[in-house]
Image 1 (cartoon, rainbow, N blue to C red):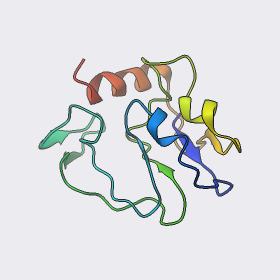
Image 2: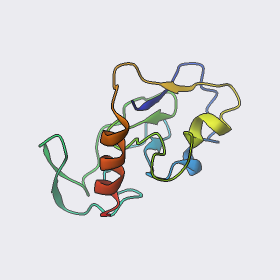
Image 3: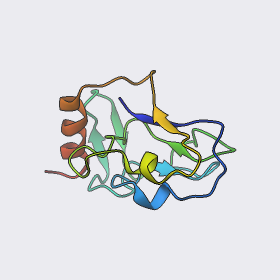
Amino acid sequence: MAIKITDECINCGACEPECPNTAIYEGADDWRYKDGTKLRGRVVLPSGEEVDADAPRTPLSDDIYYIVPGKCTECKGFHEEPQCAAVCPVDCCVPDEDHVESEETLLNRQAFLHNE
């Protein structure tokens, strides 16, 4: 499953540079599929949705840091544990029960995002 950042976030930013997929953004910042990945231009996501990887997308939160579920791999393929959770001083990076995914799905996403 993807990781989410809860309302307990203190906006310290410790998690953002740790994400190997650049799936973490500061509140109110636009996000892009191309950020931290090899995706460029029009791409078809594993879900079948076609998107422009270069286009800015609406922030998922205006107040606190947030994680884009479609870019989060729980650090599978990079680390043994989610790095955001490992560095968070207030333990607000937690499993997202709304985005439960298998390890295979997460590894496939990692390969897709990084053209491996």
